[in-house]
Amino acid sequence: MADFTIEVKKKEKDEEFEFKDLEMYHQECYGGKIKIEVTEETESASSTCHTLFKLSCTKCGREIYLDKNSTFPAEIIKTSVDGKERKIDGIEIERSGLYTAFNPLEVIVKLKT
Image (cartoon, rainbow, N blue to C red; front, side, top):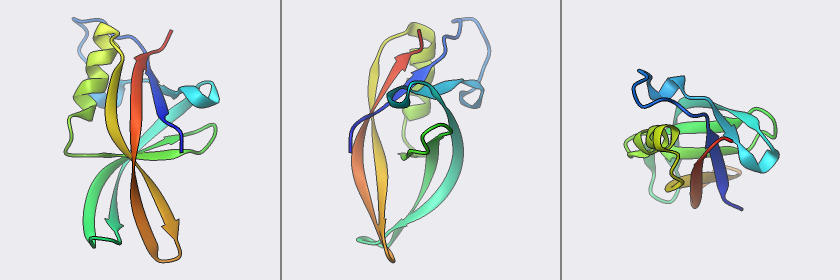
C-alpha cells in the first residue's frame, strides 16, 4: 500500500503541549482528522505481542500503527515546531482469517499549511 502522510498543525516553540494535544490530519484523503489510541496486536509469524499506537483517519478509515516504544511522538512534535518534513517507520496490519501480518510502511510527517 502507498505511504501514509501525516500533516500536523503548527505549534510555537515556547508553547507548552504534549503529543496528545497535537492536531493531525491524513493528507492522502485531503484532510481527514487522525484519531490516536493505544492497542495491543499479536503478529502471527512470531507470536509476539506488540503495544502500538493505532492512528486512524476519521474520513477514509485507513489505519496505520506505530511502535509505542519508538521515537515517533518526538519526531511529530519536532515537525510541529520546526516545520521540517520527517520520515518514520510505520506498520500496516494485514489480517487474513486468524493470521495477522505486520507490513512495513513509510510514514511522512509534514507541517499542515
